[in-house]
Length: 125
Image 1 (cartoon, rainbow, N blue to C red):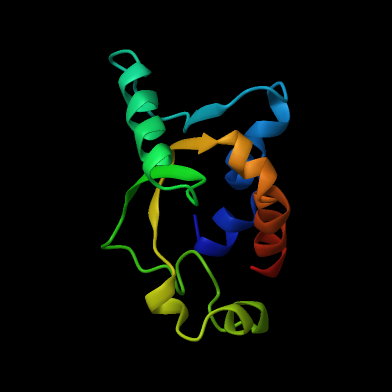
Image 2: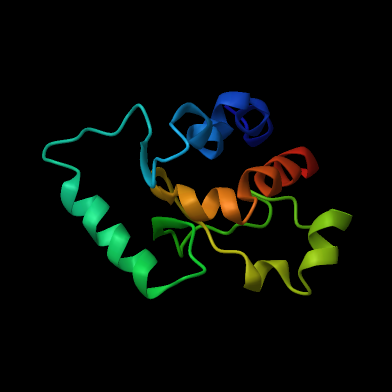
């Protein structure tokens, strides 16, 4: 499957709308791709994410970084005006993460308007 075909599939972005499926009072959500095998409780993952959120008030997601994967040209079209308007050096500013295992702080996600921001980036790319 090509990058364009993969990114054109709306289900690729479902994780960014998981908060819409949960009650408004849900504080966090653990998103797992369909190919993730869970061999133990996710409580430790949730607790570690909660600690990370507590120590970083601007964080809205907790995920494992993918430092080896370049964002520009693989995930984001960094040559678009929308990206260039926001970042002087998109390659240095944008970082990849394993999007198959993500913990969302839903309170912050909603408060900071991240769903709308994600929608704009999806449309721009």
